Amino acid sequence: MIQSIWEYFHHLPNVLAIWIECYCNQIVCCCICMLIALYYIQRCRIERAELKEKINMKKDECRESWKKIAKHPSASGHRVTTRQSHKIEILDLPLEMLLKKLQSDENVCAVDVLTEYQQKAHEVNGKFNCVVEPIKEAEYLAKNCDEMRKKNKQHKRPLHGLPVSLKECYFLKGYDCTAGMSNYIGKPCEEDAVIVQVLIKQGAIPFVRTNIPQTMLIYDCSNPIYGKTLNPHNDKRTPGGSSGGEGCIIAAKGSLLGFGSDIGGSIRIPCHMCGVCGLKPTYRRLSAKGTFDLMSGQTLINAAIGPMAQDVTSLVIAMKALLCDDMFDLDPTVPPIPFRTEIYEKTNELKIGYYVFDGYLKPVPACKRAVMDAKDILEREGHKLIPFEVPDLKEIFTEIYLPVIFGDNTQMLLEHLKNDVIDPGISLAVTNWSLPKCVQWLMSWVMSSVYNDNVIGKGIRSTSQSRNVYDWWKLAERLEEYKKKFLSLWRSLELDALICPGFAFPAVPNGEVFNVLGGVTYTALYNLLDYPAGTVPVTKVTREDEAGMKDYPSRTRYERFIRKYFSEGTVGLPVGIQCVGLPYQEELVLRVMKMVENDAPFRR
Image (tube, rainbow, N blue to C red):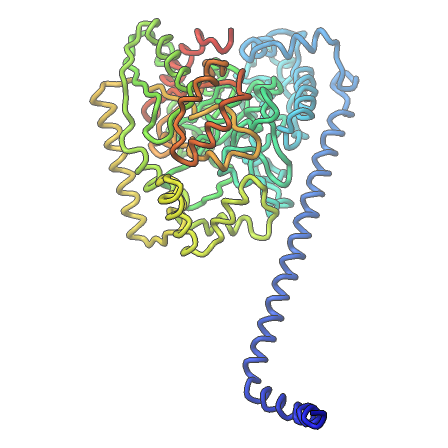
C-alpha cells in the first residue's frame, strides 16, 4: 500500500503536466476571464465609493448653504429675525394679498418677505425634509426688486418680490440638476431654465429647490442624495411624487407658489396627497426647455411643467404672469396664447362629465366621495353633470402608455443609474429592469396567472419587449387612434370639462408605493392624451370612509395592499379631484377648479 501511494505521488507531476498540456488554452482563458471579472468588480467598487463620497460632499454643501442663509444679514443690517407680529402677518397672507402689498405697501419690502419665507422653509425642512437647498442668489434678486420699486413706484411686475420654490429638475445656472441620481453631482447647469428666466423677468424670486424621488418615475419622494420627504399631514406617509418636495413645502406653508413637472401625475399626485392645488397644462402651453429630461428622444408622451399653490387663484396669477411675450420669445415652440381671462371669468352653464372608476383600480370610499361632493357643488352652481365612462383603460395603459415610457427597454434609465446607490423605493423596479428578458417574461406570467393581475403582468412585460422602428410607428398609430376615440366620446356627450378622482387613494405609507403603483392610471391617462388637468382638494378622509374599506375588493395583489394601507390610520388625510379640459383649455380647467374650491368642505 505504501508503495502504491509512493508511485501515485511519484507519477503525479507527469499526470499534471499532461493535464495542463491538454487543457492549457482553457486554463489560460479561465484565468483571463477571472482577472477581467475581478478588474470590473474592483472598478465598480471604486466608482461606487466615489459616488458615495460625492453624495456626502453634496450633503455637506447643502448644509453649508443653509448656514450661510441663517447668518446672512438682511437689507436693514439685522440678522434673519424680524418682529414676530410682522412675521405672522407676512406668512398668513395669501399670495394675491401679499403681491398687492409688495407692489404698493411701502412697509412691505421684498427682502423682508424673502427673509420670512427662508426662515419658514428652513423650519419646515427640519420637520419634513422637503428642501434640497436654498438658492443663494435670492437676496440679490429681492434687493433688486426693492430698488426698482423705489426708483419707479408705478413699475409693478406681475410677480414683484414673490418668493417661489422650484422642483430640483429645473436648471439653475451654477447648480447641479440630479433627479436624485449621484452620477449628476458636480455637473452644474450652464443656464437657467426658460421658466426660471421668465419668472425672474416677471419679478419672482426663486428661493429654494425641492426634493424628488430618484429618477422621478415613481410617485414617492426619496433619493440617496437628499433623503426622504414626509407628508406634512402625517409623517408616516408619503407626500406623493415626483414633485413631492413641492407638495410638502406648499402644504406646510413654507412657500406660496412652486413649480413641478408631470409625465404621469407628478404634479397632481402630490397635490392630492398634500391637500394643495396644481395644474398640469397641455405639454407646450408652458416651456419645458431647461428641465431634466430622463427620456430624451421619446416624444410621444411628454412631461409638462406647471404651477402648484395653496389655492386656485394663485395658479391663475402664475399662469397670467407666465403666458407673456418673454416666454414666447425665449421658446418659440410655445404657442403665443396669452391667458384668456374671458374664458376663466365666464358664467355660462357648462356640461361636465364625471366618473369615479376608471375601469382598472377601484377608488377607496374617500376618493369616490370627493368626486360626488364636487358633482353636487357644480350642480348647485347650475351646471349639468353627465356620467362618463373611460374607454379601454386597462389595455391603453399597458399596451400604449407603459410601452411608450419604457420604449427603449429601460436602457437609458439603467445608463443613468450605472453604479449608483439605488434608493429602496425603486430597488425592486431596477432589479426587474436588470433581469434577463426571459426572467421578466416569467415574472409577467406569474403576476398574470398566479396573482390574478393581468395589468401588472402586462406592465412587467412592457419593459422587456424589443421594438424596431416599425413597432414604434404602430405604437404611435395606436396612440393617435385612442386620442381620436376619446375625443369622439367627449364630443358625442358635448362636454366642456370633466371631473374624476385625483387618485385611487390618499397618501400611501412611507416605503410602500411600489406595492400600489396601479393608482397612476387615474393621472397618467391625461398625460397620454395631453389634456390639461388640475387637482384641487375637496375633502378629508373620515372614519366612515375607513369603515367602508371592509367592502373594498381583494381579488388582485394591488387590491389586497390597498385594503391593508387604507383601512386604518388615514383619518384627516386630504383628498382631491381632477378637473380636465381639452388641449389648451387651461383657463376653463381653472374655472371649474375654482368653483369646486369655493364650496369644498376641505377648507372649512
